[in-house]
Length: 194
Image (tube, rainbow, N blue to C red; front, side, top):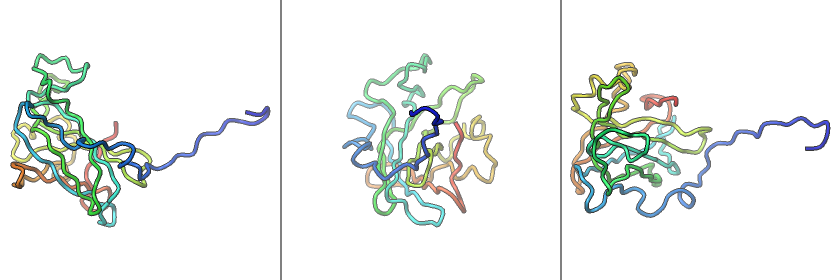
């Protein structure tokens, strides 16, 4: 930097439409292998912007615990079994209609900080044009008894909780769940600050 000039911040930029070629690899939408333990499920949905239009160039990233409720991460020191055939991380780009589909397993309940349990859930990050930072949310499952006492879900106002609970669906691939993501406006999905 030349003498007498003060440093300036780099201007912020939005997340760009570069997901397909840079961050999505073939098979990233399928988290299961032949020997993966647990109930296989499909999560599908669409991403919508504030005007209700589909977001055709978003990326959905998920990370989750295995069927036992343990993450494949060194910080998870629970005495639950790891599954060598499940790593709990996946990514998928949305299609022209804003749609996405992930093949995974239904996760188990994970430990909460208070030594209780968190309801089974899938962590989700949404990257899309116009966002300065990715958005973080969760997918919870319908008719799950642990939802009532989940420490994170309980922080969400009751009228907003339905935006975090997937709907059960049946499809050709077997049991599945629908989880639409609304980035803003009416029925906006609840997003969390990390």
